Length: 123
Image (cartoon, rainbow, N blue to C red):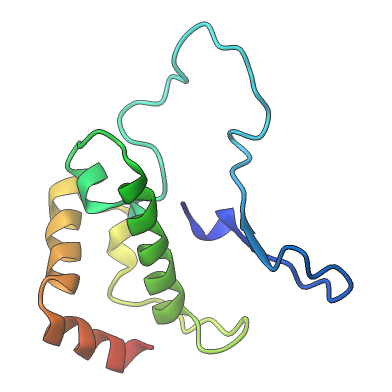
């Protein structure tokens, strides 16, 4: 799950689907003779679940956690509709090693007072 997978329907004439998730990588069923060729984990690192970064077998809980990280990212990077806040201390989440990213994410959510401080400063 990433920011680009989450869509909001802004068509007032068709309120049947206010929001939805897309994954264009899986939209067309293709027959493959082998794996995709991607080495290691795939996905936007900042939004990957902690367990996925640790190499756990994928589960729906990882997808739910990814939604949390996308929401967190939106809250710290946008100040109202379409108004980006600019770079934050979390930019390194896109390129840190798995272990460092895990420690950073656990540090962000592992202590409620730290998370609330980040939320108060950023949201």
